[in-house]
Length: 285
Ligand code: NAI
Image (cartoon, rainbow, N blue to C red; front, side, top):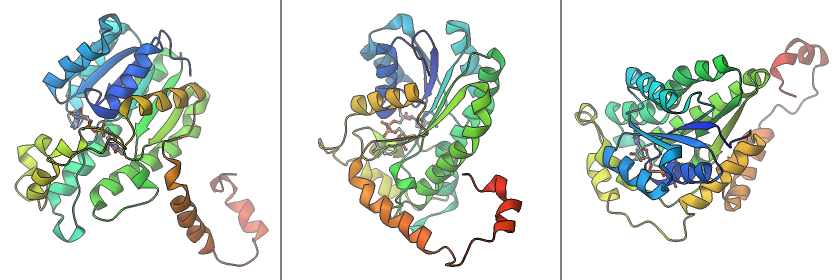
């Protein structure tokens, strides 16, 4: 999709990956409305982008549906039509399954999956209504493709984001709305500090609080990819309307192993031609 002169609504854009995406889009001539729960980080993000004519910031918790609609109204009041939705806000909610409680599930799913859902329900009708086409980008994770231990809530949410993105791509193509699932590997960001964002309502029945405080002190490796590099990869993926935007070829062997195992588990018997005909629309060829 074309980005110059168009408008992107980016959630979680005040830090890390979202800010890297915002920077790439602004440099390419797009307007960006950055929505984030961290108000002070929004001011710093706007200053660091140094392009006030192309940047609007709005404080938003992506789990707040009324707030989401107001944030979208504000982006439209400033720039006119929204063309791109970058559903990127996320929190690193991690821990052993044996210690995982309802508040951990509800927060992880509410932000990492529910935030993407709320973006779609709020903004997709607006993109369709103006008829100029656009792009939906969802931030899933490499962990949706190679699940890692001690990340059940996070991985479940990211796998849901991937599945929903794949499912809607064909449906939206006739409206000239592209869909990209973005699945980054390790990127330098603030994600280890997610615990400070856990709302009070999710602190009563959690098994993760102590772990989150420890994680907040973790050093980010300089060998992890920079958010600006990742932002450029996302920009390229938007321009080509790539279904999948990946960042790290280091994960290819693991992905091959996983998919070979899935294929190897198919019944080893001839295809039933009549049955194939009957389920044709499900086969995805
Ligand atoms: P980050 O913590 O630097 O940025 C996330 C942003 O989302 C922050 O600015 C935060 O304030 C905001 N946010 C959190 N909860 C929010 C809410 N309820 N409403 C609105 N904004 C909220 O972390 P990072 O790494 O840049 O994360 C961006 C996305 O990338 C997330 O979805 C994350 O899960 C995903 N990701 C990150 C990877 C990494 O290695 N950093 C790897 C794979 C995926």
